[in-house]
Length: 459
Image (cartoon, rainbow, N blue to C red; front, side):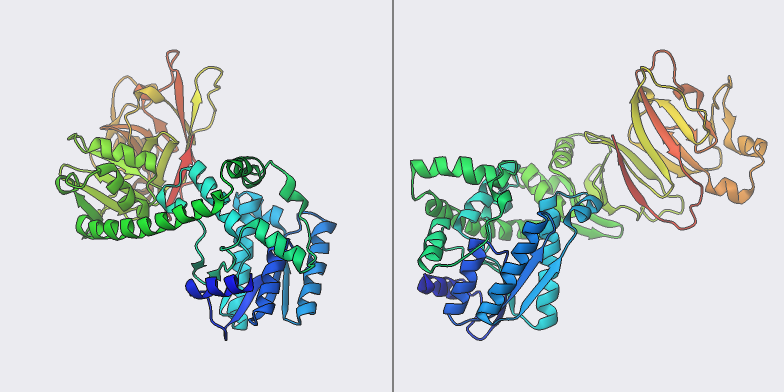
């Protein structure tokens, strides 16, 4: 076991004999064996332990056990305690993902402050198999199928050569003690379902299943490297800088097959999802100008180009326009004004008595909507009036100052002004008995001096 351990470290260039290594130790059998192998192979190391405060006294006992392990091997010991549940709630993450983020950030801090070459974790071959299937089920694509990488940044996995059974056999042969995490037996987590139910079935079909899959993962990793090189070459050819961002010549893009795959790989750096990328690809054969949004960028499908601009950086105009776009996920808007959107079914809806809340017949609106400031000549048909009226006259009636006029926001559908934010809606877009779906726009303030830009998503 020690010989294979040393060979794997050397073949993967993980670290050298003189390097100081920080070993992440939970107290489970895998990390306990990793410590023993590091000790017996003569490497210089320290132990780091995270108490995630998820299992009360059991978590505290784990920490005491790992401290004793560091004392046994006479190595430095680092420990920390996290309120993982609170961190997960605050960040909107699962407990598992929050714990992962917390521990790796802390490992990085400890290693950089104390001069450790890298952080070693006890991931093994069965972890590799489980991760492959997790990514396969989540549809992460080729990038997710390369599995756990032995060397990733300053994190090394020197036990990826060994199976769980080999690690257990070694621990028993050496009479090692370890801690059992009771949560590992629960099948409410996807990884544990794979570990206890799916993978044993595959191993009954082929007892060498894990090693065969590992060989496939290695080939996929090589395939991904070749694929990435090709994508990088194509990206440099297709993606062109221009004064307002990036652009792609549509006729040239259509020579790259399959177009949707190329688009996905190019646009993922601008945070466009696979679903939106499919919509963009479907628009290429048309002539209509369309706008698509990600959480960070807008893409305009113009006559000849796909134009990509960062949200919050409108196209250099003294009178910029901002887009409110309808997607499968809901209403997406990139606005400098504090305006929120939400949709309601008309049945049972009560019209609010609040001038800062505007309600529109959703089906009469033409998306994407546009938010902009007042321009000379603008007019609308205010709610309750028979004819249209110039906004300049409306502003005079409302006794608005020049600065207030300049700061008024207008929500537009096509060529129509449907709402003077916080003041009036247009008669044509009001709620009627025939209305089936309602768009509610809420104006939460009028202070636009800061120029802050926010992206909202409401379903």
